[in-house]
Length: 111
Length: 112
Image 1 (cartoon, each protein chain N blue to C red):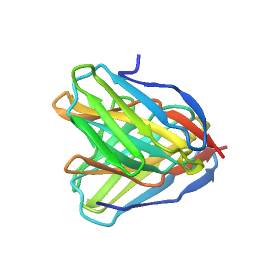
Image 2 (image 1 turned 90 degrees about the horizontal axis):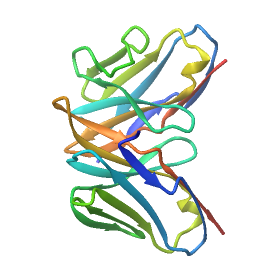
Image 3 (image 1 turned 90 degrees about the vertical axis):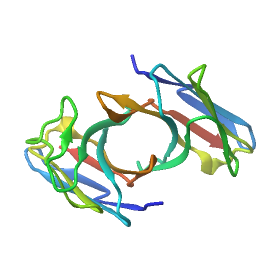
Image 4 (image 1 turned 60 degrees about the horizontal axis):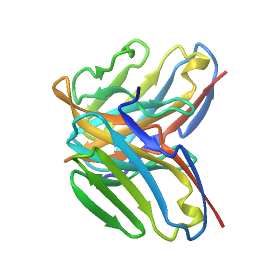
């Protein structure tokens, strides 16, 4: 069982819709990362969170440490937001910092 | 911030051959990593590339199959040796500075 679970696995939306992607984790963490992977394979880091909420443009990320849950929101979605969104959590394992990745949420935004 | 250039971006290889992937960072970074992403799967860490010493491999990955070099703080290579179709994946170089993550564009390998 993956220690990082994302939902939904696939999401299709119409342009302009508000999008929410969820991430739940079971391990103790030092930070949580939201990543965006484009069809070509390249990955861009969107947010690094250890508490609270961060906003960058139309993207908002929140984390609830007690509930071990994070959400990524996209406001006024656009076709260019179509990508795979990956949640990754970092924590100490075996004495070193390790990242555990979710399987990703594939988002398709239709015009 | 750091920008990572990775090449080749894609390649089609014959079974039994080896391919070296290069990763160049535009600034010095403390930690560099190599990941594999098989079709439909999440990222799996192959190894941590250590500057000036042998890489630290994760369970299931060995140096003979995935030799890694890191001669300085901005450059690393990953070689996929004696390739088989099961090695068809995206290979990603990553760096970390003060917790922030950076990734290359990935190298999509297809082994025939």
